[in-house]
Image (cartoon, rainbow, N blue to C red; front, side):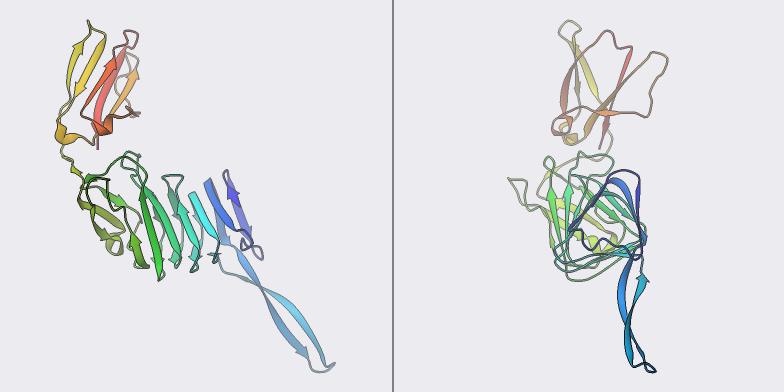
Length: 272
């Protein structure tokens, strides 16, 4: 079952237990009226006959059973329970799975990091509350090398459900050392093992070269890890809220860009 547009509302006695994979691809899955059918046996003693009636129980909780998965990003209305041996694959590759109710985590959760992704540098699960036990969390770095001090908000609140937490171990040269604060506030923080990056704002220096054809923008090496952004506007517009990342700028402290005489105004800034 894939929900990519609009809202899919599941109403009792219907449920999604026959779907091996449930994927949110930007749409909304409404499970507030989801239900399950149970059989109730009654006896007619006068006629000595037995009859079976179907009773519908509406719970508003979507169950991800063993061997099945909940995937992607988007909104899920209602609550979720993931059984042992079930899987959650959050994001595509980086995104937020927003659950309006509670979630009980008892299976495996797979999440990704990417420090250049905006507005969040990691996958995220938001919910009204978290519970569960014996779960496993696997976190993979899907972007460029991390920097010391990187904080990733994986969950919107504290989660004490994980018996096993596997975080990225290395950048290929040194070993990462993490602070796992998932049970405290839902975050992880890289303490050491990566290149440090200065979190304080700095200035961009510029130089025009090539007879006025190129612009060299530089910033301190201590700020390697910041992303250069730009925007091009009409002369009477000024700066707007729409910025675009300059490709590759997060791994260097100098970028050379061509000067286009036809562009009325071009603005640059650094963002961490």
